[in-house]
Image 1 (cartoon, rainbow, N blue to C red):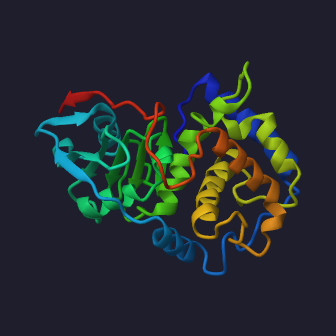
Image 2 (cartoon, one colour):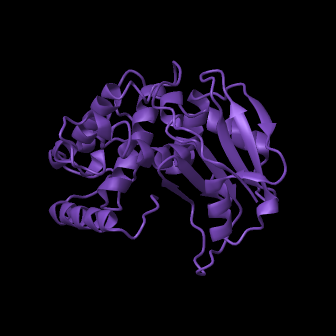
Length: 284
């Protein structure tokens, strides 16, 4: 899920997405989406083929958090003193990421840092700060879902910490970041997924890869499939579903722009100039 702000920009996004949905309403979606066991087999396959990396970590001084962790934890009614901020460095990048973890989160700090390490570095680098919160209710009374992303931070609640969830959420970040930047200039799009060049791939297909009928959410799911495709079933074969040919053009599009963006779906190499900068440290 992508977090949206109630601005003119987001209203324009909703308008664009609504127009796309009207054009796509007659398209079925692949069912079952990945395989007969759904996301369980997908997650197991991703973990088997994206091994954990070594890491070094250190805790922030007591009373300090990244500003985004302070804001999100406050919005979801958490005591800021229950949030630990941890710097983590992996062998594929000299600059650290930050994990903000609530002390009541069901997954351990070590488990979460290991899970983040499985994400290919040129995808992982789009996120500066990962936030792990237990099941929550916001100040407005909203109940937490699975996950949400805006810009260079991702929040994942409760026990939804999975490789496929992180890949999906990071897909939102690269959609509006490094992959969007591959479009020819001038570029007035807010996301690659909402651009005419990318939608041209989708229009050629018989089906959609997501039952949300949202181009933005469908794009994030394509990122998951692209990583799966390159590491679980190489060479490229789209073997994740017997009906893969029905979304063949979407897969071709996501791989094409992923390659232009620096081969970001492959689990190799190092971070680069697209590494997201840190959020601002603030006192609690």
